[in-house]
Image (cartoon, rainbow, N blue to C red; front, top):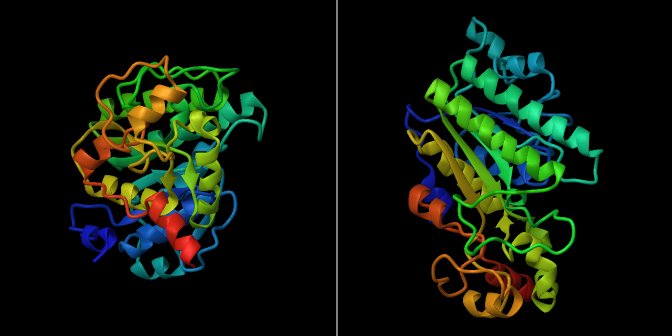
Length: 314
């Protein structure tokens, strides 16, 4: 039995109907089918349809408050009209839609889309009585990923109480979104969880890892960490199943460092000026997932060493 099999349990108090924004993107395209296999009914709200024919799409723009409100109160398909009344709001919202990084659109547009879009999503959910929202934050909040020039992290490991200090429009937008989520969660006594998602790795990208190991400094901006897109699906599911936490931030990354050496030894060589707040054990990732393991029960299924070995055998 896989972790996904053992994690599937959807009591009536847990969300069943989901609005998922950004399900056509790099991460969302893997999270959507994961959640569908867990038994959720999903409506994908995005600028373009997803590749999954069995999951309905509603094409729209998160920066338009009216479209967001309507998406949360929409039929998922023609079958809904047979129910004899307009649809109720969805049970929960998973919000991944965004300009996904810098240098795709001008900085002010990246900031505008990400900040106002997230505000619309959370505000509509709260005012419609939806009390569970999962939003995509980012590793870029830790300030090094898109920094100008060489910048060291403040301390290792990077945990959720870190002083986030990005200097780019994308990372800044994610910090603002976390503040927005905190404010609404407090006001409406809701559960809004922000996932600081690491460098997303798709199943066909593990061939890149030997290059990561051979060039250690190429991974400093990602804190030598990653998240398998399928394991991200498990994390979202566990967030949806865990109620009563109010506002929370979770690092969404896999367990181990993308290096051969033990983490403490590796960082002593490649990041010697950065202090350690606690001992780093074994090969644990410098961007720590301890909180999602302890609070949500996350258990990774796609360790990069095993995935790389499977690819070589294949």
